[in-house]
Image (tube, rainbow, N blue to C red; front, side):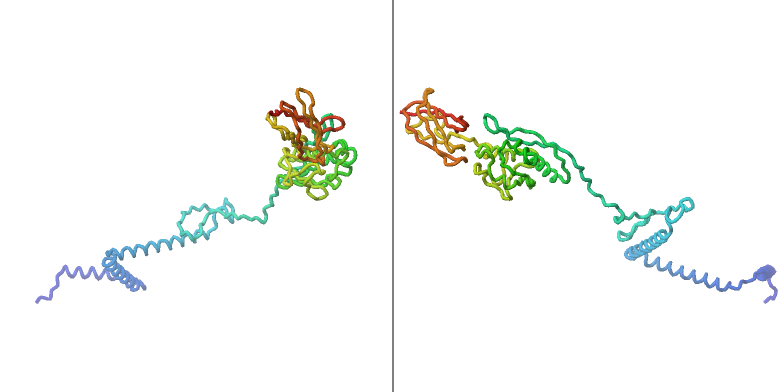
Length: 380
């Protein structure tokens, strides 16, 4: 065997040795080499794990959830960090604060929403309390009814009165009623002028209250008796004066109750029955005729004796009647009623067959008042 070496091999060995002599190893070279080898081993293990397990569908779904959870955790972390920074315009000068562009982050419903503006708080402790504006006092014109006595009896005449009202709506209504009624019951000549002597001296208005739609008129105890005229007609004039004035001055009222000396009345001066629920303009005490013929009825045929009937209030407690035929009086008379208040009466009259006129009336001061006439026939 020959000891001679190949010249080409010798040249290669010499070149490699020369290159090795030029390399100077670092102090941590061995450590870096070991880290590099360990990283390759870890990568190799993950490659085998991914190839063998992640290829299966069930494990792939579970791993996806895990990846999403990691992503959400990272997103929340980013949001918390962003919230910790001072937003634009808060805690610093707008000109010196850097512009911040943030991407909105979706959070769960239970998390708080982070904004770039300072939240607005409602502080009612410093808000002034709003009070309802009260209407100022005002002067209004209300109707007042006065009693006037003429040739045909008592009548009402309307005048007016200015009243200053204030406060709530109800209070203003009550002051309207009080002002109008007070104009009737002014002391001295005022009462005589407005009441034509019907009201007794000392009659005064004590109060007027509005309860629902009813005006409660409170009069002094002196109003419980008649004045210069004690007739039913005078009583009606006085009662009508109160009702018309109270309702005219109080637009929201529909009925009137009258109290005398603190007690509600059921009759007025013993002449008129008063509805305790309250009186209206059309109440019978204010509208029923003072004399009415109830029988015989107009145009009827009757047998003799004929029964004549009537209803009314008569000053002298006498209901007067007269029967005539062809303009000639054939019979007349009167029936005592026993009262000057409203009451009913009747009388029987013997008559021959024919057609007659029945006239009933009240005799007052020598003249006939409240005359009523009907025509009827007596059969054979």
